[in-house]
Length: 80
Length: 273
Image 1 (tube, chains in turn green, orange):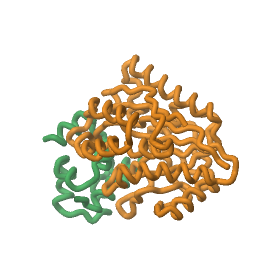
Image 2 (cartoon, each protein chain N blue to C red):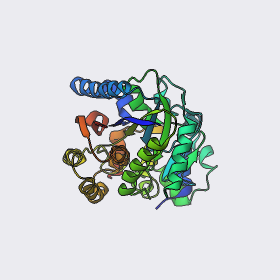
Image 3 (tube, rainbow over the protein chains, first blue to last red):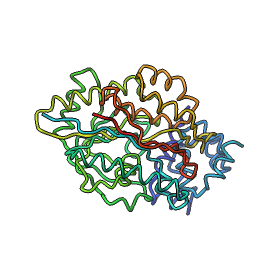
Image 4 (cartoon, one colour):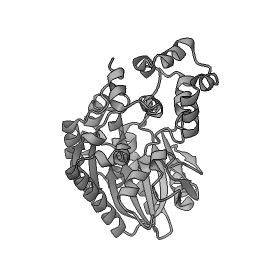
């Protein structure tokens, strides 16, 4: 299953400028994407398994790399 | 008439650059030696053009339109967009529009339907091997991006056939061009999935063994095992393109080593042409 707008957010966050803006003001960036409420909530609570079901695995990893999460923590949450 | 002067394959995991300082010394040495040996062999063929067969790691394509195969037909392409690839010494890489266009035309004549792009970003998948192989001067690069990232992906059989098509395109090109092929990626690794970090050494070694035998057995094995041996392992498609271009013969392993620090079963190979 692919959530288009979630995937688009993760794709766009490969841009260092957007990633910096996202780290500084997450809500402002999220407001540009018509995300479903449950998806938006999952981003807010860093629900990695929920997000993993809705996007490509590479994009998922890129997102958490862009937000500064270490791989060990990412893997731990992915298997949580 | 053009000629195929070499076919090669090498791994390209991002951590080979990002975490290079954390790679244990002996593994670093072996990887460096293997990359350099491939670079030496490639340079010895004096290629005018290098067809680099790699996935696109979401650098050019998105869910709006993700082609199975895209040939870069432009006069130049951009270097890697990833910030951590900023030290790669080329911001642009010259292409070879005439040969690339011929390849696309030949593909369409033969019943293959590639996408074409007149300007691509060549991400780490293409550029890490080029960098580590120390190719200076850099031959003209014709990118061939094969989807091994987002389903649906081209079949393994089709990737092998693409290799044969590539060989036909080289043989039928009228100018005296020396063409080499570099397939990048693999061997086993797992990215952004629950098994992330896993390296399937037994799978890798059997894959390597089968590259030395019949392509039927190889493709049958990969079709059965790829779904459970890491999503990154899907990049073996690019090795199959090189294998097909070599006629399914002449595979020679330069080195293989699982490298946990870069979470990739790192493979390096060339084909006797």
